[in-house]
Image 1 (tube, rainbow, N blue to C red):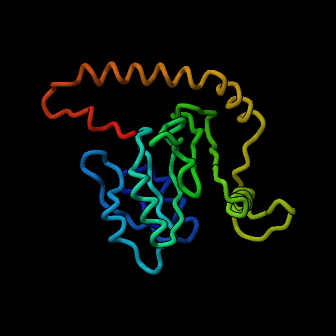
Image 2 (image 1 turned 90 degrees about the horizontal axis):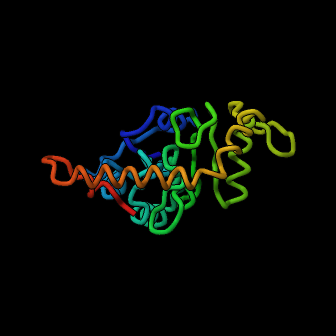
Length: 199
């Protein structure tokens, strides 16, 4: 699986724990995200998927990454752990690839201490995710594969649900504050905050 060297160790651990080999592609110097040109150079007959990482809520160049994935018949698993409610070309980050993975760890913008979520629109693929997350036991209560036990408990779910109603307002305030900071950094030598925004 091809992914970014600029990420949390959890990204790499997820690949290794799936008994796959993480292959690092170079980064775009402007955005510090996967360089689609280098991603394509790294593809071999063993490549099964690309995992772009949306660090700090900033989107990768998903248009090019998705085109490369279609060309080579690869899955795209978006690591959107830090990109809750982020948008790329009018679409929510995490909903563009085959799967989107979000984190609710305590440092995230929507948090319950630990845990996460996987989203997707392929029912068969989502069933496979459920089975792995549920220590290898599928929805028919049959153990069909290996897997960790990542079931969220009710307390964590309650903490998350209480945050959802005001999430958009909190994000809007955060974005307004970020825009103010960006405006004040304009003109500073060696800082180019306006180039870091890809929508």
